[in-house]
Structure formats: C-alpha cells, structure tokens
Image (spheres, rainbow, N blue to C red):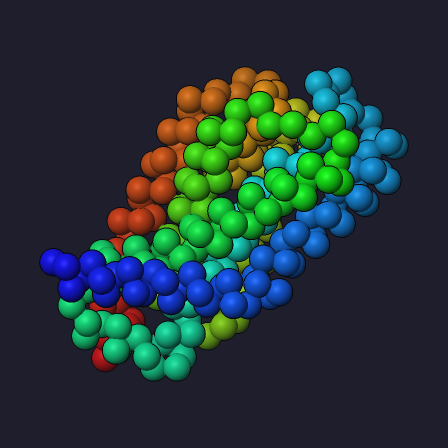
Length: 259
C-alpha cells in the first residue's frame, strides 16, 4: 500500500512539475489574456456598454467569468495534453505496468489539471487586486471551492478526451467547438437576461452558465435572475463526479491505451 501511494504521488509530482517548469506556456498566457480582456472590455468598452442595472461596474462583473474561462482552459489543456503526450511518446505503457490502479492513474492526471487550474485562478485573482480598482471577494471559501470543482470537472474531461484523441488536432477541436460556445453563452461577458429569446433560455441549460454565475455569486455576491446558488453547487459536484468516474473507468479498461 505504501509503494502504491508513493508511485501515485510520484506521478502527481511529475504532472505538477511539468506545468510549473513551463509556466511561461501554461500559467502566464491565462494571466496575460485575462488582463487584456479586463483592459479592453472592462475599461475601454465597459464605459460604453449599457450595464442594464448591474449591481457593480462592468469591469468587476466580468472578472469571475474570465477567471472561470481561464480555469476551464488550463485544467482541460493540462490533463488532455499530458495524456496525448504519454500516448505519442509511448511512455504510457511504462505507467500502466506500475503497481497503480486505473483509478490512481486517472486521478494523478486529474490532480495535475486541478493544480494548474487552481494556480491559474488564484494568480488571476491576485492580479485583479492590482489592475481592477474596487475588486474585493465576498466569500473566499466558496470561491476556492468553485475553482477546485470546476478545475476537477474539466481536468477529468481532459483525461477522457486524451484517451479518445488520436492526434493533437482532436484536443484543439474540442476546445474550439465545445468550450468556446459554452463559455460565450455562459454569461462570461454579459448577463444572460440581456440575450434575446431563445438564447437566454438555452443558456440556462448550459452547465458553464451555472459555474460562471456560481463563482460570480461567491466573489461578488450578485446573481442573475432566477439563479440558484445551491443548484449551481450541485451541478458542479455532479459533473465532477460523473467525469471522474468515466475517466477512471476508461483507463481501468485500457480503452485505446493498451495494445
């Protein structure tokens, strides 16, 4: 049991060291893109946008959505690229013969994605204190919980996509055609109540909408119309558990990773 734990922690350390060593490619892009969004959308365009009765100024309103967008992308990219790299360089077989279960292997990759998502999210929060005047967090604990759960969910999705992917293009396609539309309709830059029918209604069935607005409530203590914080938290937790189970099952069965 001690050997298995040591092997698990070694794999987690490898995944953590991988993205920390390449922080200029992993953490910094999220910081820079978020800062640009805040400066362009928040400070330049925000003054010209009809805020529609928001409780805070537009710059502060978009910060939780931008953090969530960065967390989603980084958590997903870390685990999916790690899985693809392991398959492409043919060292995944070496991991499979270690005394680790499929659950432990999948969770090692998932934890790596979680840590990258959390590091990115917390780094952006620290940055916002310097570039967004008046930025304050209402509930630090709830904010951290949301960042961890969302990182966990999309890191698990990254493992699943990494298992199914046959090329690097498949990972990018998923980002472009799935994550981008979900985040754009998730209320990152606007309240979904501003959207015309039926897009406002469709957005309510978008899980990213509940994640973004859940983080916005935790950070700024404001919510969209008919939003439920408890339902948002339940949705995050259910998706986290569902995709973690699928990822663990696929690796345990060796789907597309065992010859």
